[in-house]
Image (cartoon, rainbow, N blue to C red; front, side, top):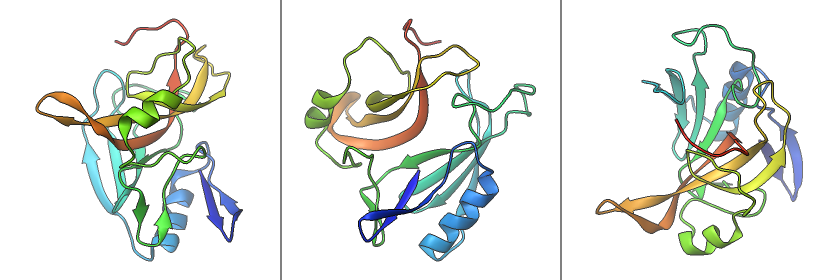
Length: 172
């Protein structure tokens, strides 16, 4: 995740860096401490805590809880980032290709890479190749639409990164 000011990157927060450092830095950026909320995991991700500043959430998964010890990788980073709005106060929130929560889904869906990779959490809008110990193929920013009456709507609900994709397809 990059923090920009004046048209240039002023700081990068790597997904493999300590989550406590990222939480402290974002608390400085937003001028307040986050709301902390525990969430229950599932078959795709372990339990953990969400640290939320309005439209920005850092998700910190507790890999040691029920999943046993797993090495940190892009599949199991120190933290994930979720943007649920186009901005938080004066801070703009977007993927590097410009995609924001609130964008028109049909326009974003057209820019998704069509190379056979799948992601259970949403549609990738940008991708970077990544070798992971798990043998998965890449890390991406994924988006999901809002849902209206049980069907996908035409607005991007959120962006999340990193998310690892499988070149073989399928979701558990």
